[in-house]
Length: 229
Image (cartoon, rainbow, N blue to C red):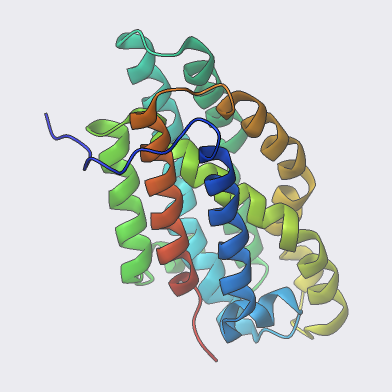
């Protein structure tokens, strides 16, 4: 079986601070990137917004399976019941979110067939394959590092982005094409707090390092999900 690369161990007292740092830095780096900033400010062009939704669909479609498979693998291996249950719970929470994206894109004039045929950018492909590896062969809790930084991002930027897109973007039917952003912005505040409460009890240096590595990998890849204007 493949093993996840060994990472520098973090101390019990600083690892959650390091995880929060990765989440904050992802937000800061996206704020500095023109393509993402235009989305947050409601100034994104329709084609660029559709590109973002298509790329998001191409990774969200796998999220439920990754979460479920990680939780089930942990149960089989007798690891951390609470974390295994959290992974399975989050699989249920994420179930069907790819349909939100298809609905948003339909209201922008995209058929499901067009979405499926659209090219997948290299950053999304790398993200999917990294999380597939951690789910199947690496440390199965690692996907929670990915989930943490993305849910933190949703809390910090999605609600205002929805309001600004509707008010300022001028995209036809935009009020019907923000289902995904609105759904995540509304729910992910509770999800972040729940994740912090459970992850704060994680004491294994190997698992702490695996979560941090996945958070850093997501931070490195996510800015390239956006097309630059």
